[in-house]
Image (cartoon, rainbow, N blue to C red; front, side):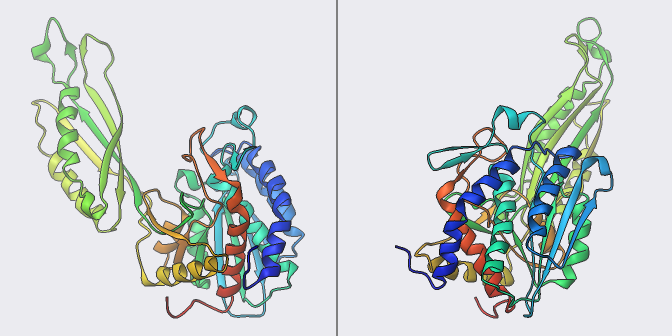
Length: 395
């Protein structure tokens, strides 16, 4: 028997579980990989139909810059209080068309499985059902609650970040509803994500009859990679991991061009300039005669850094979860999300309000704990209720 401050709300969450599962399953069983516009739009329309029944103040379907890549959904509710809350989760997944048919939504014991079940369909569904709970109890002690469902987060929110940045000045905080972290956690900080592109030009030559006339781009890139790797500062959260390398035309030809890509993660925004300066110095000094090196850190997602405002939201979430006799783990995550863009835009942000993930996201092992759904639905509903009065002054 759970004894909670808002027991009626908790009971409503319990009663909503089957409806939650049914809608969640419909969402997961729609292929909506990034840039697969027809699938993303199908999810947008399905979600919009459900939100329309909750009588929002305003609802907009916003086509992406390239409409063939899909749309975003913006839903706004108005109340009678003072808190202005922006929440969000993404609709796109990383999986290709046909994955939903191969691995459809299913429940195996306590584990819910299927493409995007955790990242991020549980968080999308969680927001819909949290708003349903507020409507059921006629809760209006908030100024504004707005939901932003975007279709491009998995490719860097290149289009939707502009919407988020435009909205940010009108809100007090951002609740990002990515999947809950393993161990029942929420996220207080995330690393920024960048891509590093390394290119080497040399001169091709026959590897057997005229090796001395060639200048190997491959040998040079093998010199460059460990030199660039030395720019890492893992003690402050900066990592550089090379993930792709491509070059050469035949097994008996010295390659005249080779390129490599690295995943770069940072916890401090100033690290971007330090790495760029380091790349400029390293690439100016090729180690293999006759080669030229170009190394560039591409613009990416800024870090969602630790801040006092987020700590207050974490404290609030922990107190709400304690009403259920449960404890929230607090995590600093390596992966980026829309919370990064929210924090960069000046909003107090917190992340991880979806159901709790089990297996690895972006893989066939992706899964979610079914037993976490009701407590997480209660948690998000209560966050809306408490933040309806404004951001707590202390945490």
